[in-house]
Length: 236
Image (cartoon, rainbow, N blue to C red; front, side, top):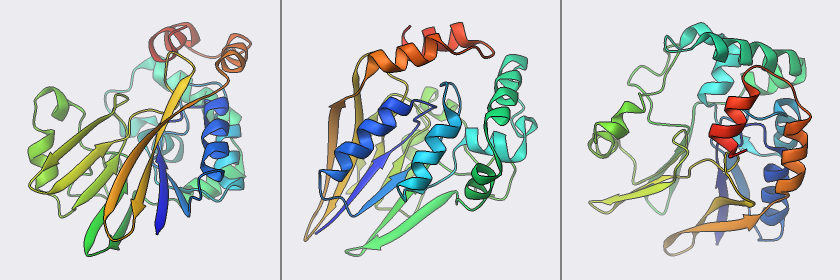
């Protein structure tokens, strides 16, 4: 049996990432995959990347990593406050982080039990070489995501970007939005386990993390738009 742990959108929340790694290590996991957006919003971007590196976690790039690697100009919808926030993030990272992220792919593909499985931050454009390779989240509002997912070649797909988790099952194909592990408003976080034996099973795990510590770290931080970010993304 092979077991793969999957999480996404940590967004600078070190206590959540530490809790997931601790739980994963107690669950006989063979591989850990992070679906991007480890940076952004939260107060500890560099510390989160260090944990990814130190624990040999495979990671695909999210839009926040691409803002760091390629600059915020790749997203035409980027506001001035978002640009200033990412300038702050850049000041907190170093060459080690840049070198690691530069080697991370946009997608990980696996063929297991004759099923093609993908791990990516969100649905990719046909032209993956574009500076901003992700499809728009408006697909969700326009109810077009399902039909676009079915156009892909995958039997199973795991993605993040949208912070609310959901699942789509259609024509014996399975699409899982893992949701945001880091942007939550209580002391519970989630991640997923892909269990592969004669059959494929997907498990969603809920675990507790040190919410009090995260709130203390956030309250002692001072970066652009911290009040709005704290309220809208972390419920503080």
